[in-house]
Length: 187
Image (cartoon, rainbow, N blue to C red; front, top):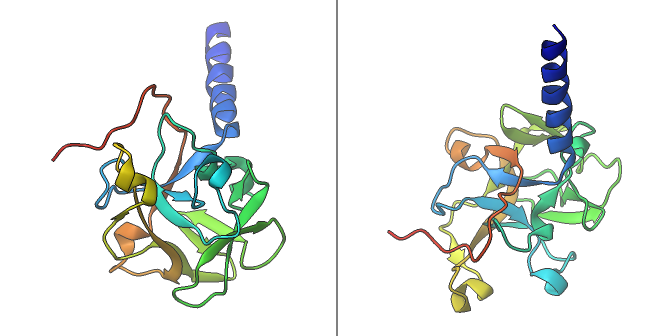
């Protein structure tokens, strides 16, 4: 009995602690990037530009990735909060193709998200999903000159649909703790 209680506490508090750490907002499927895409603020380290529109970028496993981290517990409050910058994801409007920006966190309807069945929708517009663009991934500026060959795609708000289903599924996942460069998969 005592062992069961201790095991239960480890499982419950262990899961709570893991979820308290920042996580990636990661595409559910790899699409055309076997290393997966994560929601990202363009730039890297001191060149991160929080005034630019968000995109998806090769998930930065094992390297500096603070521009891809989200606070999982904020999701329960309807926010997609990036703790490194104390900003939340906001849609520019509720129309198809609306871009997304990191903005000061507020109670705006364009910042109020619901995470259900692996989809992220606006609470006031439950038919609108966070959607990866249909275009193929392109090499980023750094991806063109660095051996890791990171890729990016657009990110927008669009009507939830069967056609875009694979690009509208998301998961929150703790970054892997790798060491060394993350090289692309060989074909």
